[in-house]
Length: 336
Image 1 (cartoon, helix red, strand yellow):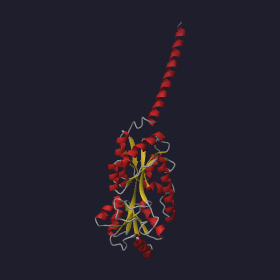
Image 2 (tube, rainbow, N blue to C red):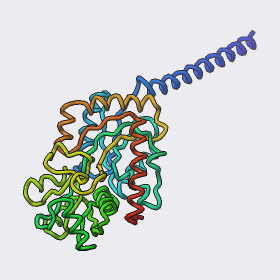
Image 3 (spheres, rainbow, N blue to C red):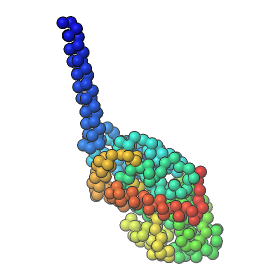
Image 4 (cartoon, one colour):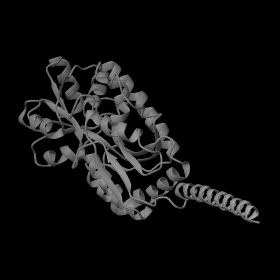
């Protein structure tokens, strides 16, 4: 009858609807699984650099992005988000979807900032999933050529004799170029006076002209002026001498045993990013950082390529946060 036909059609429609719903759910589930494993990445990846273009971190990011893109078979877009002591970019990434499509290059500053800023809208240890360290490299103490100190022992003696009259420049309050010098002050018992600048370039200009006495700066920024005779190099901040300038002694070997401060870069994703995705990027990074041409490019800039497991990098970040918290406390540095 007509009524039976309507009932039968209604059942068929419900059955088809249920089948469609099940199929859609299975498709969504399989898509999510694919994305979290073999299907990743299936769209471009954004790499946030919390610094302006052209600086040391940006250079590292662009070398890594190009090579990582080749390994993952997907384009990687650099997104420079400078501002607020590298916190602006970090905050944006911390709030991004945890799907592996937004990553960030972190630096020493991100380990310093938790102690330096009274209010941060993110936690470097809780809101991010560590992927791997990328680079590590020393800073170098460079001085105006006529400074009456040519080594660390002489610098400590001069700083003590002039008590508060020796000025050191930095690329900004709370940057590694500032706190590496404060660590030196704390360990040597000196009182060198801090003058913050907006970036390395203006700071180095004033050291060259004698407006400031010295600076702890990256080798990438400072060494061209040392080679040009406009600055003199006193020591490097790493535990071992740098292969880029093996004739420059370390601070530890030339008057301040136990001193070590390095500038580093690492790769982070938002917390909650699937482990499969983190491991996939980490494995690709291992190949990138072991490539001879990448090592050569970093060596030329005073960095060493530094791959590690996500767990290794997580422990390293925590140890850096703890280390710099003590230096910030001792120096009394604060930024709001």
